[in-house]
Length: 284
Image (cartoon, rainbow, N blue to C red; front, side):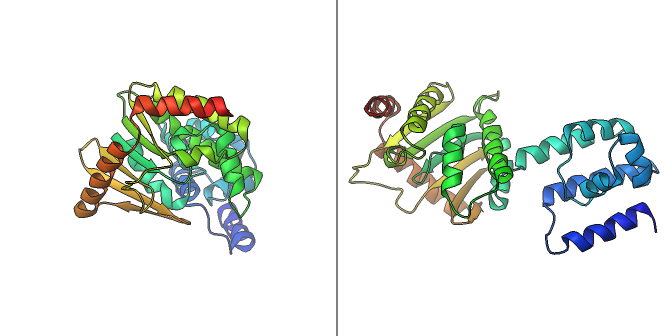
């Protein structure tokens, strides 16, 4: 029996009930294709790359995240012209993101405009590490330490979109109660407010607070997002418990645009929103 076949059979026995992560599986398939193109068995390849045959098999089966060192070495040995490194970076960006959110995260990468209304938590693009950790640890079932770190890393990685040039134009409307909840405690909330004020000063970011007392409110159906792509197509996104939906229907997109336009009028303007945030910071 070849090393490839033996490793594949061993993996099937030990992990039969646990399907591989799609992103890891895609990377593993890419690695395997380049290895076979080079005419190498797993045993021959593992000698060159300096890892065990079990490690190589696990990566190819989508059961293990490859290390940076492994990816770099494999890229050189298999002469993939950087394809493996690109695949690894794409996989890293998606790591820690919920499966139902990944399509929206891909659309964010190519956005030129992004509108967000949120009434549950501070949007991930604006979270601090401490706030993200507190929010993740609050929601059952409790993640493992690795899962929590992956989710936090995924959110912080996405935040690079705020600073990318050419700029994406961002608009955020956040309910006042989301911040007043003090997720993580006063210290975490103080740091969060400081971070929100810093983000609000970015030239491509508008941040508005929807006051707790508001007799008119166009967002009572829940949070949603809108984005415009580089091709000037508009997309929407709505999310609930363990589910998310990317919206492309023109009529539904039109409805969300109307609601967001109303919310921008009903919320405090950016200057007044910053003033409210400063007062909330001072009261902690």
